[in-house]
Image (cartoon, rainbow, N blue to C red; front, side):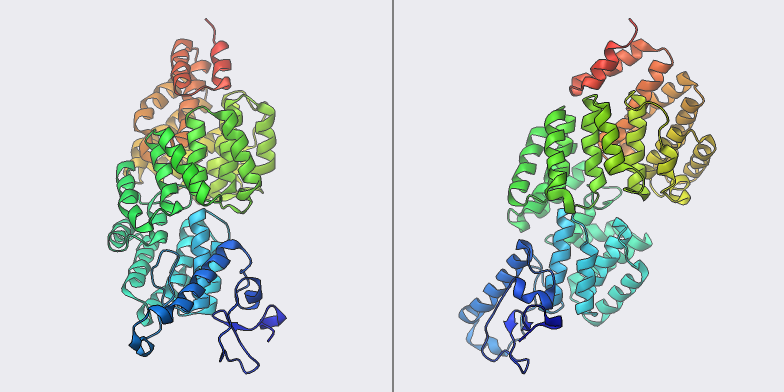
Length: 501
């Protein structure tokens, strides 16, 4: 029989239905014929999940005990074997959303939304929606999704699902969310969505106080339950490069990508490996090719473009930097915090190195971000990039407002962001000696703001500019020599050659 809206055929859990809506002689289908039932059913990941479910269904009579017919029907599971308190169709949609989150792909919220449309009482689906709305900026009514998750968890959920709903509730309300997440992972190490939430890479903010060593132990401790799956391998690749173990990180990233070419965390790790090891031409070409291929459906595509632009800056290709900025990073193409972190910092770095002549459109970047985010940021990482963008725009008044906010915020903002704002203000006012002295003092503790070494490098480059502008060429030469010892960069060699003897 025709399926819903005349698309595909009428099915129930993959069984073909007859004119009376029954599947008395079970005949199964999968893939495109189920599009009226599932819509997203033509890609390999969806078909793979359906095939696995069908295999379980067909093998069940051969493996269950004689009295199994009297037992309750088995619940569907996620891709890592964890039971889901819902029916097969909603579970399939949830698995699609989870798959997109783990790969850093777009439209995970659409799949989670479809899951709760198919089953409004599916607590885990509602919780996942609330999480991606709160953490990833997805267009989700977060309070409503959270309330639906809490209601559904009370009515129908197992212990793991109730624990995850509690984790999401605490993270959104700022009530020991990090502790709850770690406790949840101790009990349920195979919960991939929880693991993705805990480890700060590119998709989620992670656990605030999770240092690299603890994050590494967390991933290593949970990895065995995934039995070689590419996801924890991709997280491990990112953490290894944070340790400076670039060879090992590159091998892990390639291993994950061989299993799943769309694995965004592995791509992110490899982007850092190429940059930190000075393989700028290789990194530029490889990542540019991925963006135009597998990366077309990636979330945070602008951040991957930012990584390519960093290679182009290091290669001293000024025309390529400008072209990429207008094509992939300019306001309108990127907005909000992503514009602040990626577009704004790239503009500033291009100006500092002489790769951008004339006025830089920093005010246009700031215009895409709420004033609250710029002048009263919730985290030191956002505050650092707000200070960069405000310095690039020459907005001294806003820099001082940001400094005043940081003075009353958390310890890291008080310790790092307050003097950072003062140093940037000194730079704007052309008090280069004061700016250089303040920035140099900040470098040893800058890691506390979070983010990657490549992102924090913007402060070092600002220091270099202040040293040169203030006539302290010997200090600038020492800094450039140290940078060139870390990695080869034609831009730094050009700047070193241009210093007065």
